[in-house]
Length: 324
Length: 262
Image 1 (cartoon, each protein chain N blue to C red):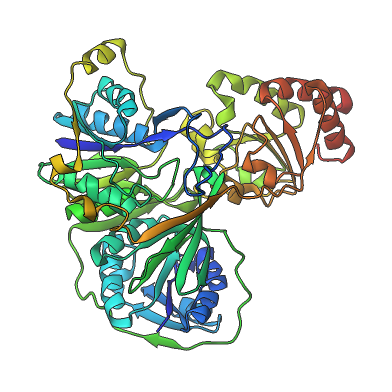
Image 2 (image 1 turned 90 degrees about the horizontal axis):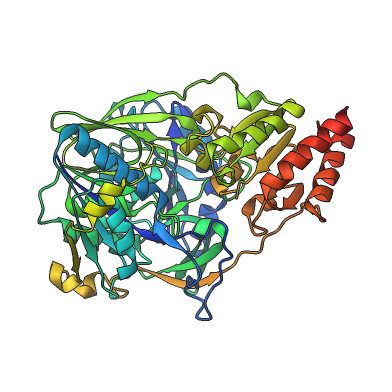
């Protein structure tokens, strides 16, 4: 068969980017495995989304049922478990997202199938499906091979590939939900929107952003002085907000805000991909980090390998001089 | 309330150069300093906070070498009660599903209300172990949890989604929660706690002790194989500003001002 089944992801009425990004990977793998790529959409009132996904020239299988008005990992697992038996795809693919991570490992255990999480690339070579994934915060790549199995489960990192342009229109097929009744042991309660802070960093022209390299709260003073000198707002990486140095509403990255300032100055931020995804759209990026191998340098325009605590005061002083 | 917190001993590679061993399949970790996985540190704190609020007991469970006992004692110094350390070189620890199977084997005979894990490991970062563990145990789960409210026979978990959105779910107990960093402020171990921790029970067990068939959690049982590790090429188009610190700062200031960036 060799079909690749892609579970598309959506939230609050809109498809998420990962759903389109997977369209850059699935057809390639399906072709090399001698099958087709198909998209599975689970939700309630999702005709528009089905149409949009079918625009990638794939068949879209739709389960449109009020049971799935909100995401529920256990309900997804039940549906996928039944569909794996019915459709027998060679690959089941979804995103390594807050949704994907909440059911794929459980599904793999339930069905005794192999799982590779957070692949950034997939290849099918000589009858073996191989995934590339990153370990040690992106410092090492691993090629992981699947041993032969009825279905390979894989999740794809968000933003790992560019979404392709839509192609020809494909077919939409509605099927009945294999799950007929609601479950009682896990209930969706509500969504809580992110708190709104005093500064909206998505609107800032200049951001001075700090990471783990700040080391402690009191070191923020020199950063504030720099920010003041260039009329910048201060933001931070996950490490900086987790530590309580920076308010949560100023976190840059996939779990925080996506920012596109004219100038982004990263101080002591190593640049985990989740952070890079949130700031690589900045017009100009300056990075200061002690570690010459820090991934932040892959997106920087100007880079300084040095101790931020030596660089920042000197930089502030020079900027004040030059700006008068 | 009986909880079990699963923790992992990981290398700190945030500022270290990582080298692949000549076998191409493992990383040379001889020069790294090891400590508790970041998210697991928050999981320990959350389990202790719940114990302080609701009463009960928190046990530590970890798979790791003798050296990791320093980390385990630290968790006990912060308030965990006793610990099991699984040491067995037959575990296919490259595969989170095998790791989860071992953890489940170590837990399954015990009564518990909550199992905590970190939501991801700093070294291999699968984000899979906790959710797989729940399935092996046949209990509910929620991953990437940023807030926990224990109710009567239930738990409300706030899951961190992308963009700062939270998904609140209600689970019947028992349940596995995989904890996200930033959920709390992990405490420093008090001196008195450190002293007390030395006397707390820390059992070292093998797969045989746990009654786990090693062929079911070893390399042959794992359905994935690490073929090759390599250092990705760092492609940087950045202009690296060179010189003494003051020179670098001056050059950068000049670029920013002359370029009209500030």
